[in-house]
Length: 195
Image 1: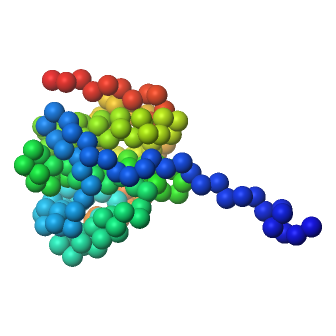
Image 2: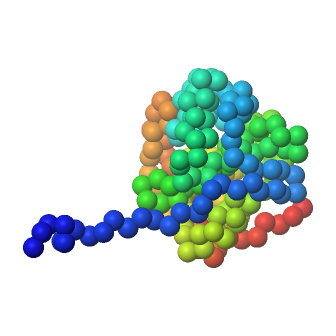
Image 3: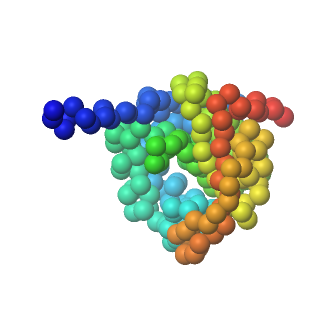
């Protein structure tokens, strides 16, 4: 008997398909473009934003934005990294669902000048709802730094539940930071209340 007969076939995870364009009451979530680099660099050069993100270095500049955008805009990744834009198509943030280590993960950030307006809740609810339609049996994982209670409240309002705590490295802070792990189980997305 040959060894090929004994090998298990590789099981490929189900994919959600190409990233969509999603319109909400106030926002458009669309695939990124290389022309978004200046807006991304402006937002992520603000330490108030990057200190809450694990994989973003500080300082962050236009070249860092381009280095991130090139693979993201290539169309070769299964992920859904969407630009958050207003009706004027100005890049104000990012909301994404990425396949990491075999699990789908939610990540997001918003330019500080757009905080406290409900934009992030609107964007996260929209991408999760669309993703859940394409991948109805798939849990979505996420997490927040322990010193980011606003982000944890946002996730809890949408139905995410805490699954554990630990520490992860934050590039912007250059240290290990306490991190709360969360998950949204299939069918548990809470409808967003419209104000």
